[in-house]
Image (cartoon, rainbow, N blue to C red; front, side, top):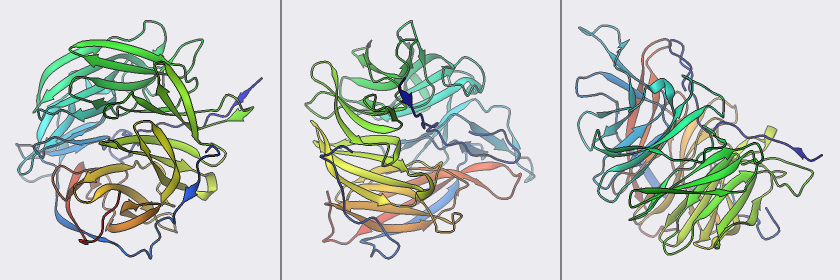
Amino acid sequence: MRLIRRVSRNPVSIVLFASLLALAGCAHTHVAGSPVMPGTTPQCTIAEVSRGKLLDPRGRQVYIQPVVAVPNRRGELLLAGERNYVFGREGGGQWTRATEDSLLGAIVPTAGPAQLVRSPIPTQFLGSVRAVARDDGTWSVVFAELKHAGAERSDSVARLWYGVLDGSRWATLEVIPVPPHGSIRRVGASAPVETSDLFSWAVILSTAEHPGDVLVLQRKQGRWSHEVVPTVFASYAAIAYPPGSEPLLAVVQPDLELPSDGNSLFLWTRQPSWTRAAKLVASQEEAVHDPRVDFSGTTGTLSWLGDRGRNGQHARTMGGTPYGFAGPIVTLDLAVARGSRQSTVTLRDVGRVWVLDHRGQNGLSHEIRFVGRSGDQAMALGTLTHAFLGAFVAASPRLAEIILAGGVQDSPGSAVATLVIRTRVRCLARFRWR
């Protein structure tokens, strides 16, 4: 009997607050380049422009679980999560949790208070929130509706939803049709991608015969279709639609040709049916988590977090084309905090920037590292003091700007709020990377 060593974990980081509920390689690849070290000379300056707690138009304090951070073309930033709260106070007294906390997220404008985004379903049933910006300045948003309030079981999804968010108003809202047999997992779903006429999202589907296939959902001209990719035992999926090419899937799953395996990383391509094209990372080297695929034109980037047990967790990346990914593998950071998530932004005239939660040698201290890539080398761009309670998200709404958002507390037991930090990135004129 084949032994499948499952080491997948929930990719949604959960932050605990004292007075609140629990919140939530194969032969052709090789490792190249030196990882980012503390002594690396920064090629850029990361300057903090402003910081402040997220407030709504009524001056109430807002917390949005750091899961989604997606800017639109107007420079507005959508923050969204699954456990979100509003706190009010009277006469300058203590912050208390407001009753109207049915939030999916908030829109952070270029200036002024945030716009609250109401959840179409009760928030205790909300899961797997994802979003992508549309060309017209709106957002396509997808999320799961759970069968039971606060359910943590992976098979707890009752239905999937799709909506178009225009400001704080839902312009479109519909249930996504899925195969009648099997269950959708609430973890491991990809970020959605959208072209001018096609929306795509990948989730994990389990049936009695195939536990852990990838279900690719697509919406074109208002009509839904789906494809089942026979991955088996998949833990994570990341979908990309390179321009002028067929879609690609990065899938974390065990290698079924081995007697025992865990979180290996595979590339799947559709030509015309879905086929496992390459094994990119073997779980014997590291257990892969949280894969991300990004394309800027025809240049692709595949990034992930690699868990090496007692040797800690690190962030790595490799480049690609519309036809696939190949080495070299570049290590971005050797000590990324467990439970954190990687954020990747693209700055014009600068390129791809990874924003990572770096853990110090004592295992306690944190700093936020901004890392770029130049050829086969990871380059330290700058650092900021880690100001958040736990996980954070990052995005770039405007030229040379990176916004960070995560939870903070003034003191143990006090109300939690989302802290928004705006930074400005300035790089040496001669410094460029791909």
